Length: 195
Image 1 (cartoon, rainbow, N blue to C red):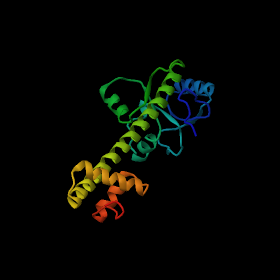
Image 2: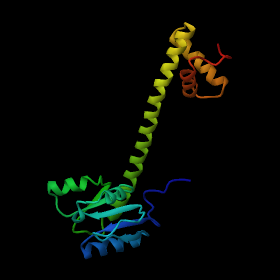
Image 3: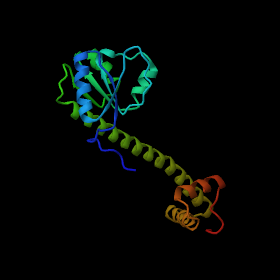
Image 4: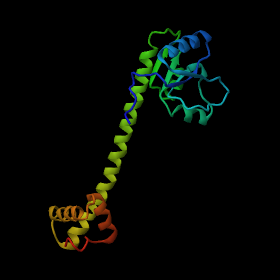
């Protein structure tokens, strides 16, 4: 299944937390034009929806409940800024916004903020996946090194020859080098057929 385009917004859900009625009506009207379902959140009420994006007014900050912060962290956040004081910006940055809009709102800029938020969220997720893969590879490299050292010691061979023995054993058993290395580290030796 392919991922939805950041430019295609129809059918998405947005959690909107805006105090000013004028700003809220601008957002609703623009979201309706873009095909986005609007779910409004009143301060003090529970956050219980699964949205694709959250647009939150800086007047709702700070979020005191850890549950509220956790729920907002599940989707891209667009901050609606009313003041540019350092203390207010610090509260906004705690949300790790993917994009922002400045009050008073106009319809211009809302689509761009949404596209940027979805694109940044996608890129952030891709980077997180890459980091996880690299961390896994780093952990597996330690296992491979331990297996190479074990084979070097057991068979009295140099490092390239030890690695070649592990690679050949992995190929024969249709396993990855990392899987074979883990078995060697656990068993203390190469499988019998490879000697």
